[in-house]
Structures are given as C-alpha cells and as structure tokens.
Image 1: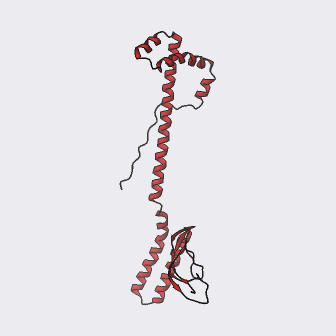
Image 2: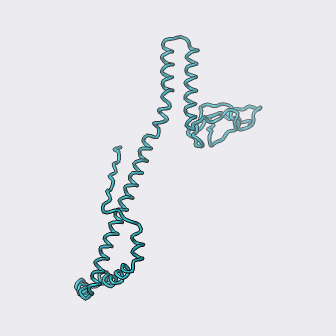
Image 3: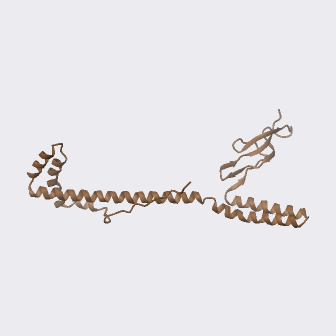
Length: 215
C-alpha cells in the first residue's frame, strides 16, 4: 500500500493576540464605532433589493460609513485569524497521524532486535551439530537458546500460560482431549499439548490441553 503523504497547511498573516477582542470591548471609542456601524450592517444584511440597499447606504452619515468600513476591516481580520487557527489545527492533526503511522510501522522493530541473539544461538547450535556427533552438547545449546528466547519474551510482558495441575479455564485454555483419573478432581489439566501465551493480561494464544473428567 503506498504511503499516505500529508502536506502541511502554511498559516498566513500576522500572529494574532488572544486579548484583542477583550481590549476592544473595553475601548469606549470602539464601542461607539460599533454602534455607528450597526445601522449600516443592518442595511447590508437586509433582504432589500440591491438598489434600495445602495440608496439607504448613501443616506448614512460620514461617521456611520467610516465605522462600517472599520467594522468590515475587523471582520476580515477575524476571518484571517480563524483561517490561520484552522491551518495550525490541520497541521497538528496531520503531524499526529503521521507519528501514529510511524509507530505502527516500526512497532515490532524493538522486539525483533531483541530476538536476534536467539537466532544467532540457533545458528551456532546448527553449526556445532554439523561438525560434531555430541548430541548432549547440541541439546544443551538448544536448551540455552530456548531459555534465552523465553526470557526475552518475558522482558516484553509475554509469558507462557500455566497449565498442568491447574483448573481448566476456558478464557486461557482450549480442551482437546479428556482423561479419566480418579485421583484428580474434575476439570484439572493433566497434560499440555501446545503451550499458550499471553501478553500482560491479553491472551495471544490459548493453551491446548488435556482435561480430567471422572464421569
């Protein structure tokens, strides 16, 4: 699957100050200008035909026209602020998404790196078995490799599920066979057929087991 590319949106305009609106509300002149502009805004926003709106606008005083023009500039300013804020938000979302994709892509890299020594040990055991008839040494080498593998998984929170002598638990065990041992209670696991594994509290693979049934 081709890797998705994200182009960041470049915010434009001057940096904005979050206190501008509050300062404007405390400025008597700004309040007066807003009141003078309100009449003109009502005309502009009305449902009147264009010619009638133009006629009414021509009747406005110079102060009202100036105030209306200033309000229009402020509207453009806040529109620019909104656009830049949206651009910054879009860039943040794209950056987070890109980082999440990288995390998923390389999630197994660290575990694989830790397992490479296990592969090295297996290679040495195979090389030794080809040059020697000492099967005890081969068994010892494979046993050490198996222990290294299990220890490496345990460091990642991956551990085998306990079975023999334990009570059957359908959440972590899968019964493939039954036994009839009168000395054991019902549902006691008598044999592990395939080892199960869990990662912390999540089952990766249920253990396949033989379970005791008296009846």
